[in-house]
Length: 321
Image 1 (cartoon, rainbow, N blue to C red):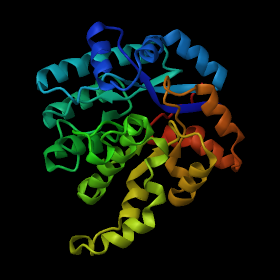
Image 2: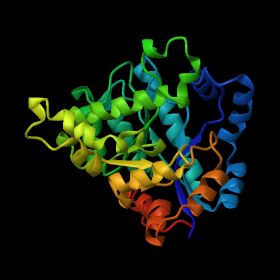
Image 3: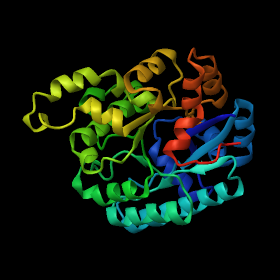
Image 4: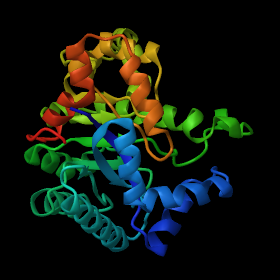
């Protein structure tokens, strides 16, 4: 049985969606953008590469995030178009594809309703969010209607890396730190910690949050997070950060094909918390699969990372393939 990959990007082949995606990646050279767009929109080539890499199922997500929109109705329209399209792709090949919904959170109740439509009517498996919404972070009680709906639906929330609302002074003048090199990790790890410290997992204990890139460094700081959190009286009688992270957060290998962080994440979080992903088309399916195949892990750990954890988390009751 082959692998299930969770962070696999796709775009609706419409000018508005492609133009919107372009605004999200200003640091990517135009030549690379021209190579990436056909890969984001081409299902046939994607399947060929999946076959070569031994990936049975890819969980698709729309690369055209809506969270930067100021107009809630425009965000909802784009999200519905993306979700309808992803559902069509999944219906055409349910043996090879599942999908995460695009959820507009400018109006959280509206977003919760769209998530419910995507899950219950379209059959999507959860949602992927791209960072903050208009500078507002997901620990804000403003978003509780969304968290409550995700918990009630029993679907995970994948928090994808994204830019901060403004460039931090520490990164000014150093474009090498932008995007996937470092700034996205710093922003997304901080966002996840806001969720941890902001009480989201106490209010919604059955929510499962997914982080890419082997957990955006969080698995490696659990001891220190617990130690320093104890200095704040409001956390004294609550679960420790490490307890919340182990219970409520899952991590993927997307864009992090290295043995040391893999073994560290497994040691810190447990084999049930690590899931295979590629981050296609920004990373190579073949490289990701060959790296994991060569990893020195027990057979049952391989099975958990490659498919079993995803099957349970995303309610994929039938084995892929």
